[in-house]
Image (cartoon, helix red, strand yellow):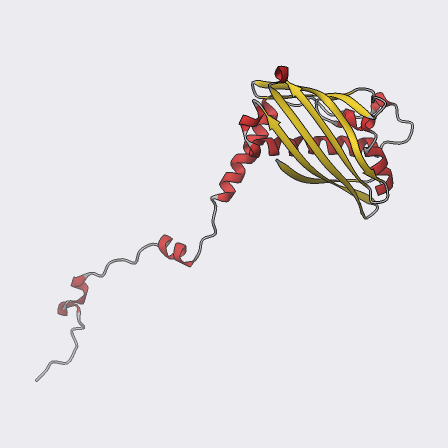
Length: 221
């Protein structure tokens, strides 16, 4: 599944790029996410928990920054995880680009996501909507942390909430239903307007009879 999303932050591009590559700082903004200390090769152990309706997925895995370019402000982040004893798997590769926008930055996230197992049965449309909801939550948290004054106590900084429950599923399904309604809505054209217009009253044959002609009409001689 291929996803492209964007969000903006008020921080300058160089600062935003550096901050976003500190995965320990970003982790509190990942809904349902936890991260450990990196090993000698820079690979982090991590966990992501997601609950969708009656189903709960807890993915344990690893994540690393496989490529970074400070000049172009681009980086590639790769991760994989397993849940349900290995029956559910997830593999992700994300290209992050930090672009200048005014005095702040626009962050473009291009993700290739492969899900196998129970979550995959929900379909790519639903999974795509879930991913966008999670990114929106993460972006709001990232912006709040980036804009916090230097020296702010970490305990006072916002964190992303847990992922899941009926609320998330309802919002996702609402977006799906809304999309379906929009796809089946059309603009009325001339033919549709003509078809919807009320029919003209039928002509009454009696109204054309000679008895209805003016009485002062001249008579033939």
